[in-house]
Image 1: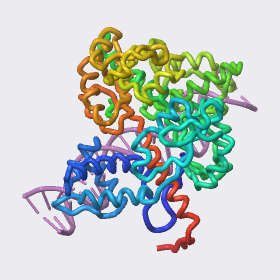
Image 2: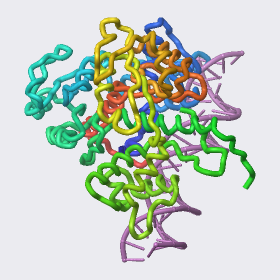
Image 3: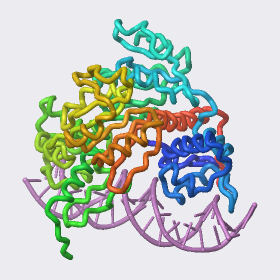
Image 4: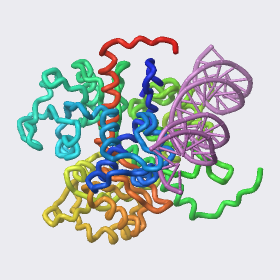
Length: 229
Length: 229
DNA sequence: CCTTGTGAAGATATTCACAGCA
DNA sequence: TGCTGTGAATATCTTCACAAGG
């Protein structure tokens, strides 16, 4: 979570909030391109991506001046620029640890291999699962973790294990050289500086929704009169 | 994403950033409770939850003054207060649409039913899947969506379908009365005001990691000399 | 004492509104 | 004329640092 605020050198220091939105813009741009759209205005792109157009323009302005006043943005060119900025012009070997329901769902997820990411290994510690093929990959034993990471130069690890083993898997990944981790296990991982962790947590999302749902429900309760203090 | 900034009435208007962290605190508190810990300081809890202690105190202060100076927080009491604030003292019937790999992974996810959430229905449009049992539930046909939502008073819908069907599933859920949606499909859903959408997107997370990984990789490249402008 | 709860400062993020350019 | 790019205003979030209180 602690990213250097701005780069030391004179060039870009893209805000974290912007980085988090670039993938959404990229997906939207791909959809437009498939649609045959050659040029798009910030307003159109913003609507399609579900954001405010001023925000979109400011976000894109961090990458450079790629628009044309009075016209808009060239879709193909923008796809390229955003991809490059995100580091998707190279490909990233990914290791998935845990071949349970979730690991299998991830391995089968099409959008995975599509752009930039490649599953370099799918590992599990359960002997009954090791050797089975999922999405064209043979599941390997967790003992192979270090070997797989080193051989394929994996720098992104996906943890899809039960909560109990997540931290130790994480430690092993980091020790083997992985510096980016996507964690699906419901635990707070602790990692050394320089390692990035992002988490995806179903129950947290549901709880946030429940909070707002509760709010909405209480709106239809007894009306609350607001009186100036 | 557009939540009323502060509540009109005099009481709480909990910041969105705080709401997003409460589930993490709650989980951490449960772990402490199972551990037999009766009391915890903001510093200890903060470390366990992976946040700064001042932030944690400020977050908790939005719920009320539940700590004791010089001592800390009573774990059980805080569990109760946070749960109540999140709306977890009631239970929330959830419908999962899509019984593919992901839908199955979600249905089998234990932490689901554990606290506050209950799967009221698991639906799919594929006749080959309808009728099979997953995690003790019979998969129902998508045609039953409206019936299931109404009969079980579902207010939270989970979309685990392919991207192509996500928007239409969303529309039907909303029409049937669902006001909170957790979307796993890689599309921007459009919904009327008053409906909450949260998204979980593997490829977005990977792309954000790739961005930072690229940064790190370029650090070890040719050194960049910073010269005062 | 020790730890909470919180003003005030600082950092980020969003939005407005318009100058500037094709 | 129409749309980008961006200063300036605003809103939100984080962190510091300390007064208040058990």
